[in-house]
Length: 518
Image (cartoon, rainbow, N blue to C red):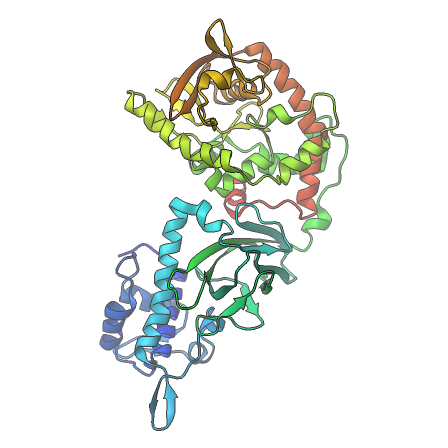
């Protein structure tokens, strides 16, 4: 039997009732007949779903049904059956019987099963193609009055009040597009969705160039915890075409006691986290996490930029890859602002680098190397500092990979002669610059400082040539650099981060919050 919580099995059962209701078979009470319908028509053969008996047990446990040779759904389920998709169903007439319109069985099957199949497909795709699914595409964007980060909105609210998030679907292209459908991909808990026109596949909305359409997401829950809504939006370039495309968004809500914000400490001296109550609370809860949680974070962020926790762990720490941007003498406020709310969303060169990194690892493996992928590594002695190395090579060397975007007919040697690149030619040999403008040297040194490794292999990979540079640990450089960065972190960055968190301007994902608080 599939291992699934009682709550989720109950939700499957309620969805089965929806299926019966839409196919005009809610009157059926015979256990064996319902079992056949569940197994033959409703259950997704491509997904691991619970058997009929375990679903009935969960429904009975939640007082949704009676049990025996006949099955009766409770009146509350029949009349108010917690149908989270009620607004998404198309209420269209089907065949005519005794002068009254009734929905066709085939139409009901296509609605419920198609929705379940779509959810299964998109959830599986998120595991391998998250960046493509959350990206705005074909001129369609999904924005909000809250800031999206990696397709995700997170907010914190007290348990006494309702919280509202407004989404806007906008056509920024030059041609009309049809908004045909939107749906939760998992059962919603305490979220409520509403749009003025009740968009469905039988009631699509035409978005002309420049048009926007608002969808309201309301959240209210008196229970403390973290709750997640996973929403998919479907569009078509024309209604005659079957080439639909989808955009996925995450919304995470954390409920806290009403006294949470008023009881939060105020700022004091920032020379050390232990002297400021507000900074100490944030630092001890979310930054200086226990060693077992550091190991769990590393395992859970191997996919790096595709992981919510990876983004969260980075935003509240100084990282090896961004440390070179911390100003030496200037006011660090601009750095902190850009670190927490980056405006750069990538370009052709960064997309080339992400794609090429996989090819570089395959190149290493073809040449007899073993590459162990790494997630976020929090420095054991300085947990405000972290690194996300590309891996560990042969269990002994830190691995950092750079995949420069070469111009036409440009060679690596040509690139190394460019003063704006961090590798230079010295007596005919490529060497890593200690003070390069891109911060490669600082990145690999802080990467070794965080991981405890003392040698690094810096791989410069392109389809037309590859250079492998060995780098040894520079202890004095790390001591001086870490000392300077630490002052910036505790004097400037930590107070700002903790204040943003208190003011509900800094959101951490449900997965990261759970990791820190468990």
